[in-house]
Length: 581
Image 1 (cartoon, rainbow, N blue to C red):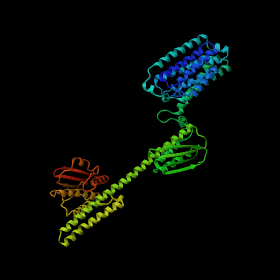
Image 2 (cartoon, rainbow, N blue to C red):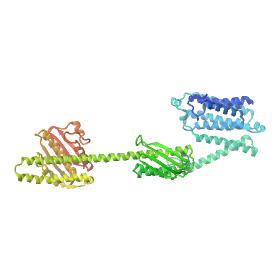
Image 3 (cartoon, one colour):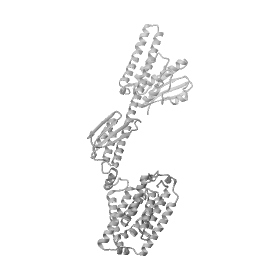
Image 4 (cartoon, one colour):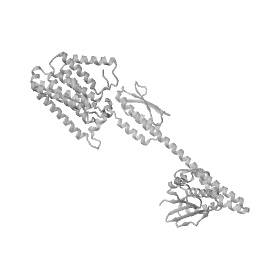
């Protein structure tokens, strides 16, 4: 009987319903005709109604029930029933005439609302009066002109209803449109209030119908203006968040009188102070105990569980929510309340638990990220130290190779006495980095002392050390300079092993507080693509991990230095370490 109609057809059904109601008031007094018109009117209202969205035809039982209600209402039709029904219908229409509706739709429903209100006060309410008062309430001529005016209003509404409807609005489900239920209830109460007070004033003061209704409307209008002044005076407006009255009303409408905002404030504080996901969720659940309606709660999650308060009560709400931390991570919360919760309260608690679960998921992701960062730091530290050990091993191999070439035992002993303490010291420093990484960047050494140690370490290698230009003997981070020098020189020595004609030159200068350390070789230049990624990404290497210069660049950046490939051309490949200005 009732199916989903288009938006245009629904509006036409409403116009038909109002037209049938007007015919009901204008038709001659006849019981069977009034009941027939009222039945047709109710059927038209059911076709229009904005509350129930029927995607499929109703079942036989529902259809029979609707027909029974319509027949009973038609059988009981009288002025009082029409009064209550028109007030309810006005409320339904007012809910669609809110400020959120598009302008053409809002004008259509405002016209329908005005039509019903005029019909209520001019045609329906006078029927409640005694016959003598009914005749004097409105003259016969005024009665006819009012009916004509209402008929013209219906013609205008028919034009509004027939206008083209946008495709988006046509496709939208009726339930998806904005509907102001509070405004609808307010209109129903206001109409009934004006009618009943007007009739009471008419009976008690013996005034005319128009005078009684006019006085009632003026009093109600004065009360509304006074309330509006109080709201504007104490409710506040603008961007400052409002005054006390608006805050109280908003708090009640948002939380039905429960202080949910205090729990949200506590949740925000916990999100700042607590880093452990399980402890955070447990504290958030304990904070629910501050709500007077909550007697206790029990919760279970991935690897944690807890409870508080009275967890054996009759009134229990179980909320099972999935977090975004993992597709299988679910948290089940059972909330025990002192009273049976209404659906609105259950929805509020589900929303609160979902918020807490989302915070928990964020905390879990932060914990995993910290773990990954820690493992990455361990990996990078191990890779850097492995590279340092490899350089030291290459230095030891160089000493052994030099000792094998020297026939004089005294010279071998002298070579070992000079080189071995330096290598031993470097190896001890590497072990210190592994045991206490935090002190890696705090070991300082004078620039001249470090330069002498470096020259002594590579004195048996085919490396040319230029005379250092040190205007100021600044203290430097020994670990950084050792790592950078070993990377520069070992890479150059490996290149020389493939082409013995390559010369390697090492330079150091400190002028006006600016340190420049460089290693230059006369070999082939680096590939342009590899040179562009040299200090930003680990590069694959045949003889090592390919991570030495990448780690050195990160360490230099952390200590206020920078590495760069100053020149990259045939016969001149120059790497530099500079301190920031």
